[in-house]
Image (cartoon, rainbow, N blue to C red):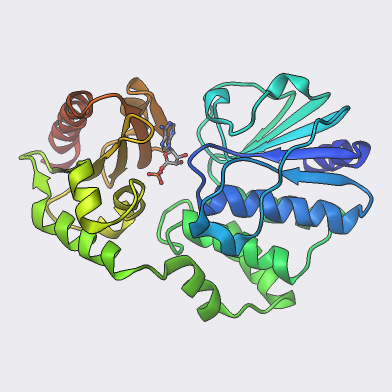
Length: 316
Ligand code: AMP
């Protein structure tokens, strides 16, 4: 499959690389690293990494404005469903490839490579580069490493396998990384976010079935002077808490008129429940976008039911 992907990339002079809305480090790092690798290998190709960015991830590089392109190849990374691709019109492309590590949702590209056991899309791009003539340099390796580290929560999730560690070891042997510098890029945060984390810890409600949830409305966002993505971005900081099997943040986003729910689990599978509420994701890490706090609470009720079943079937 990697050879086939390489052959298609080789055929096209114009290539657009897209990924999901609500950019995160794995999506953006895989996108920019693949762009840089294609340009390093084929200096005459025009390659665009597109989508809405976030100042938070400026250290990963710059995104491009898409010019009208004829006879272009579209590569979609890290996105299982068409509605979440952050690109204006998917129908204008001559050919398309999807590369993803999410569980399969739907086919919308001509060629799809899905490895849902991979830790991250960056891991798959590392593997692709290792198995083809795509070239790599220090900057590309740094990006791929940061995306992998971010999506695996610093190698914490069971999606990290011998293959993950082997790939990282292979790359680091050739390109030693300044880990402390890279981790500063990934994990440095302002005090106001730490204070919000304190607020979440103080005010998290936990149901009898071990579902933790916190409602962050616009007043709280303004009080802490953070943006509406901040609470959701710290969901992984609430790992390993005895009383919670499932934990969620429910955040009002008045600018986009939605309520964002971020969900994590160390027991029940949650992606099917998220899908019911205009969301999706991985078995134990999902998200959803709903219209009202009431709808978010209905999602919490479903999670609570799933958690009750999980306790009955697995823990008692
Ligand atoms: P997050 O909580 O934003 O880190 O997202 C966890 C996982 O859920 C990622 O794989 C996301 O791509 C996925 N995800 C988050 N929000 C949504 C959504 N609204 N629809 C589908 N998948 C989502």
